[in-house]
Amino acid sequence: MNAPEKHSIEHNRALLLDLTRRLRRRLEAADVESSDSAAHIDAPGVQNPNEDGVRPPALQALETRFSLSRFEADLLALAAGVEIDAELAACVRRLQGRDEPRPTAALAFAALDAPHWSALSPERPLLRWRFVHPAPAPLLADQPLAIDRRILHALMGAGHVDASLELYGTRLTETRHLTPAQQTTARALAAQLKHGPVQLVGGASEDRAGITGSTAKLVYRFGQSLPTAPDALARISRLIEREAALTGFMPLFEVDDVSALKTLVETLDCAFVLSASQPVETGARHLPILEAPQPDFTERRALWQSAFNNRTVDTEALDRLAFEFAFSAHEITEIIRATPEPDPHLLRDRARTRARCELHGLAIRRTPDTRWSDMALRPGQESALRRIIGMVRSQAQVQERWGFSHGTGRGLGVTALFTGPSGTGKTLAAEVIAAELELDLLHVDLSGIVSKWIGETEKNLDRIFEVAERGGALLLFDEADSLFGKRSEVKDSRDRYSNLEVSFLLQRMERFRGPAVLTTNQQNALDDAFLRRIGTVVAFPFPDRRTRSSIWQRIYPDAAPCNGLDSTTLARLTASGGDIRNIAIGAAYQAAARSQAEREITMQDVNQAAEIEFTKLGRAQGSEPGSGS
Image 1 (cartoon, rainbow, N blue to C red):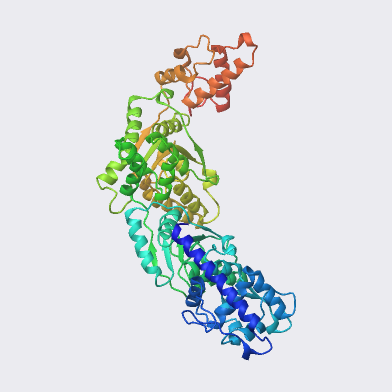
Image 2 (cartoon, rainbow, N blue to C red):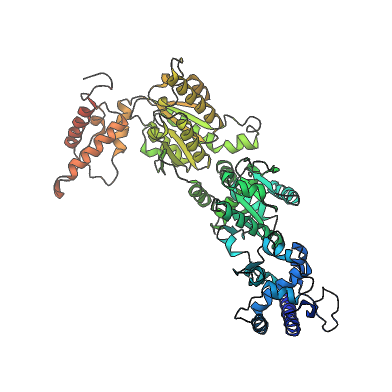
């Protein structure tokens, strides 16, 4: 509180105490048996023949804002006075002839000017706005009138938002950064709120909150915790309207389903903001709609750049942060504040952590650390993988700076198809790409995606794409032919719904801007429409002997105690990379089971493990997959 405000509050309190003293003198001089003997309390600015007093500014403000009559204002002052002046409370007790310090309507009618019974009707301000609370009594005139605590604080020139509202809402206190486009929206919102409530839709909820927060000094955010019972909701509604008149209080309702608050939205008699991801139905009351813009690439880049105080920083790193992470201005600002020493890699790591959200069993999230040295690739395969990595790194340049994203906005993602038999390194290659690009790997679980219920598969797919679009992740669809299979001739309802799922997936892939890898060992089973949308196809054939030798050379970690393993000899085993890994681990466990002195992995261990593996696969050693024994 600054000095002028403090002075104003102290001045108001002094005037309120002076008014209570004048009220006490009037009551002491009054003949409570006859209203003819009631003393006179002046309106502001009019001198009393016996007293010269000025009414407190806070009381004058309440009279104006809530259209109080002079009698209602004086009654309110009397109800407040017994709370802050012990002598006035004692006087009221004595005059009422009982141990009740709160004034009754009978006392007010006897002592105050221009009394009218309508002052205590539900339609008039004292009861409508809950300024006073009548206590039960046999007669209306004998009901003690207790001033509402919030109104007492207001008359004292201070106070805070009603505690009942603080149970359901929280005050927006943090200043949120707004982009230039959002500042323009904030100005439009402020102008519109002068005429009534507004729907603010689109963008992120925190950005919508930031836009709303810039339009008023006192903004409270309410979510789904508001009561839905009609009586309770009506009470909250009245308190919100009262706060709006008292303080300029601005309610922000964040709901995507307004049905529970339909009555409040339709009847609330003050300006408010209804915040939602998309326009919601508001019944008979039409609310004008403003769209909250999501920061675009340029604005996001400027925000990330601000972390470096205009110091030179790697252009590609900033571009990737701005392009890959679809964050709100608030989220970017929070990440920057939480990173004392700005570094592109550290910011990226924080952004990737921020982007992670619940997968609901639809995918497995991994942070791979697989490197090129972990794979045995042919020259053509490695160049294709590096091309994919280069495309992802250049997305911002091509799509934003060169303008390819302008227009339809479709087909902007980097999608690759890895084909080949099981165990040939397709998933491992996806891990290498994710590790090189500092991305999480979202390994889609088809068992969690596909549902027998109509429409559920599409919902699951949409959910996993939304998670990936937050940024920092590469989508991996293993056995993609089960999802991306060819559409068939419609013979029954199951065919029709299956085709609808494929069509939905085509459309969703078209809108996806991130990187995705599909793997299959049945390329011919994929729908042709998918193949047209694939940017790169990389074949992973069954490894030849030279490749198998290379895999054996790198399969065992440096710490593994190998003795006499010959990669050239082991390459004679016609095993895929996945098979080789299983054999290598099986041999390691065999060696580990022996005594400490004999714990070395030998050729015999490998041969025994290979025999077990091939038996499991139903193949004889030395046979190609699918060739039988």
